[in-house]
Image (tube, rainbow, N blue to C red):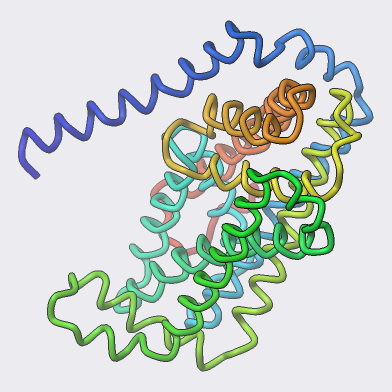
Amino acid sequence: MSKEDIKGSKATGFVKLLLGPLLFSWMVYSGKLSLRQVGASFLHWQAISAMIVLLCIQPGITAWRWNLLLRAQEIPLPYRQAFGLTMIGLFFNVVIPGAVGGDLIKGYYITRAMEGRRSSAATSILMDRVLGLLGLLLLAAVATAPNFGELAKNPSTYKLGVGVMGALVVGLGFVFSAGVVGSRLSELPLLPGVVRNVLRSFPGYHKKPAVIPIAIGVSVFSHLLACAAYYIALRSMGGADVPLGYFSLLVPLGFVVTAIPISPAGIGVGQVAFFALFHMVSGLHAVAAADAFTVFQLIVILVSVSGFCWYLPYRGVKVGARVPNAF
């Protein structure tokens, strides 16, 4: 990598680091986000406690999904270490711009230990991310389908609903077709070596056809917990009267936007996304939606930062080696 590339990478990271706080400050300054309401919500200790419980359970579920995908590739990683790496990934999602920084750290640990299986290990992380997104889209599609007539009354939500259905079909088609033709595509000479190695790993999931549907089902359940936590926050902000059809479409889409690698933990970006999405339905609910996401985000950050406790025992320890019994 040249000095120019390094400087460009640092400049991009610096811009991403500033963008989130700038967006957050703009939301507060413009009155689209009420810090007073956010602070007041923490007085409702029952609601906050319920959100903490839900968001603490979620990493355990996502770790089980990743462990399932690893076993499908015949990579014997104990669940305990898969959970530890998941928590480490959450921690780095907070300190690195975007929601994919943790995947890079997980990839570093898992590929460093899997000599000769690095492409398969890397593919498990890619599949974990893809199936997590598909689970989010499936949850939105299934929940909004019975209420699609209501969504169709609003041109904006109608387009979003159609977009979700289309993205779900394309995503499922890609995952299942890659398992069938991945080996053939890997022989294309124009593809980079890393891409070819990843494509060679996809048929491993096709040989165990139950793995992908189960992983998607686990993803749906995981996202249900997040949606329930967000609903509790929204209810404390007075937005509980949002129709279910709109809620089940807009909240998953908001979570998709926060996964874009723009700012650490989606700070600023999430507030803008939830305000804009709910504003399509009702301007009265838009501020409450942004406030609720801020409360949700603060608890997510709290849970994620606890991943530092798992990071300490793993420092300098190869995946697969014995980890200190502290955790």
